[in-house]
Image (cartoon, rainbow, N blue to C red; front, side):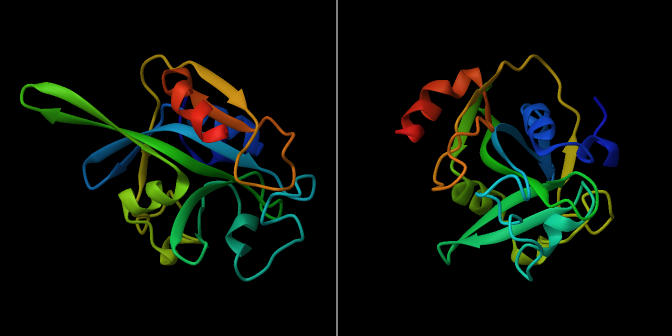
Length: 183
């Protein structure tokens, strides 16, 4: 799997599923995407793009491979990757990351659950919104998925519309944490 613009110029659900296990490289630190949610456009009443472009969600209408950051509850910066063709309005919300740290000759895994915490962990800025992932200006570099990842699906959480879509994708190793977050 090559992470190029073509990878992102597909449906939000296809991209979300295949982002599980992809590493975000930020200044040499690697964060593996272990949970993501897909958001469509007109067909998805939970999507910011549902009613068309606004100043807030304009980056969602770029071609796949752009970053979309928005403020949730006035304080949490949530990071998304835009999907589909220019003008469509799809994106994938990154909900959880796994960082593997060297710790006294062993490896320690640190799981960060929740899109607000993800944004805080990687230092997401509103100024990243609208930045092309494939440009030199991108603060994030994505690395091809390596290893085996078991992807499961469930309904999205934290929304009041479009709740019946099973567009939440996660690695099976974190399923017990995801189940708690779904309650």
